[in-house]
Image (tube, rainbow, N blue to C red; front, side):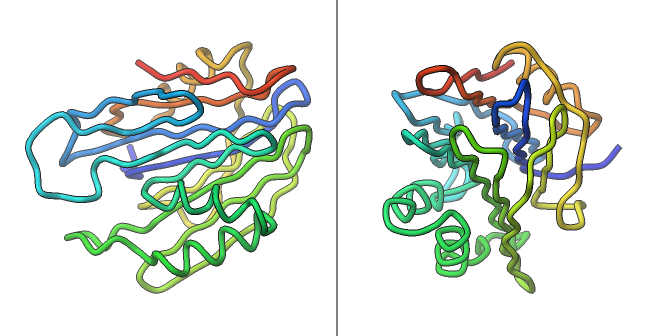
Length: 196
């Protein structure tokens, strides 16, 4: 089975956009997802001086959901106040660049827009930067990851609730799963679930 590191995806289920994040980790598996209002944070639960293992992972806005694997989550959400999703991803990912850790870990990010069948994924690594606008397809998700995914891949994904979305994301056949987060559009606002 593949090890893909951090992965995130966007898709369409029952005509509504959704987003997910799955943390796979070999080095820091002792982490949890904490929901605070309209934000979700990855929190490391052991001593380390690594600045990249705890971070804001999901930011809920009235019209958008932002999901990413680092501090860029907050800045992308702020940029959406005056820029398009495409430009927000390009500018913030370019400014932050990849993580300066032992693995030169890429930064990844995704955005879905309320009521729309379009979403965006972005990636910045040591040697590449890309942002893609994607037309979402019913029952499918587009995803990217920090390792061993070439650009964007697509996977079948349908569910009845945010909790079931999390369960299905955790069942993907990738190694070293730690946790997952699912966000689904509701009639008013967004529904969040974390697991296991």
